[in-house]
Length: 296
Image 1 (cartoon, rainbow, N blue to C red):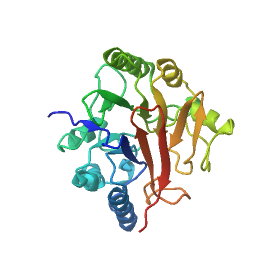
Image 2 (image 1 turned 180 degrees about the vertical axis):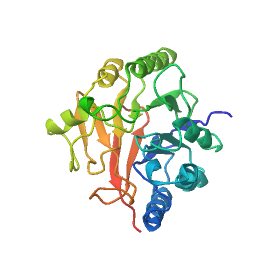
Image 3 (image 1 turned 30 degrees about the vertical axis):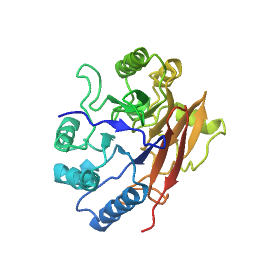
Image 4 (image 1 turned 120 degrees about the vertical axis):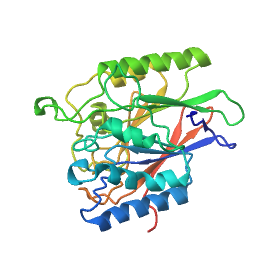
């Protein structure tokens, strides 16, 4: 299948809607799943994004019998929109009954899916990169990185997975290839499910805007992704999910670290359900972002 092409609009913008932690359970309190999917449709219709990103925990695989059916239902509205979409996985997507590889195989059935398995020789399923070309040419104008942040780890190292050193090295190589190809450093965004340790630093430094209603549930291991992004110089913003009561965005050493807004009604959290909207500006190393809950 030919790769979808992402392109800036004629006015020089590229709009992304990030849904995260949908936690579709497909049978357990079904009315809450209906609310989740209905809200997503309202947001897609009102925002009309150029790209939809699902940053993990699309389903709560442990809580459903038919994981494949739940996943298909979760993505149906996104697929039907015809808008290009990308998926990365969280700790609950393949917790029971289904693998990340099988979920990615399902995604490959749909023409507007961007998700890829990624290299076989590094950790995770779903490490991939996509350029966004300019509004008036075929030249790369921005870049989007997607990482599999894993699932679980021993409690002694934080309980949650991390982006491994081989993934960090993969990112460095991909970034360097793009710099060499384009003879410049493209503005980039990175998406993963579990936040990296620097998210806590962003909050502690007092630069953040938004809510912090729970601890940053990140691994205690710091594998150096943030340092790599700082040294490569391309990533200007990262977006995670995982922590349902956190939706803030802050800045550390010039890189903005943001949470999405929890989307799923069938899971914990006090925040009103919604999504994050991100708009890249062509030719600039900056982006605008806000949260939306959509009128229901």
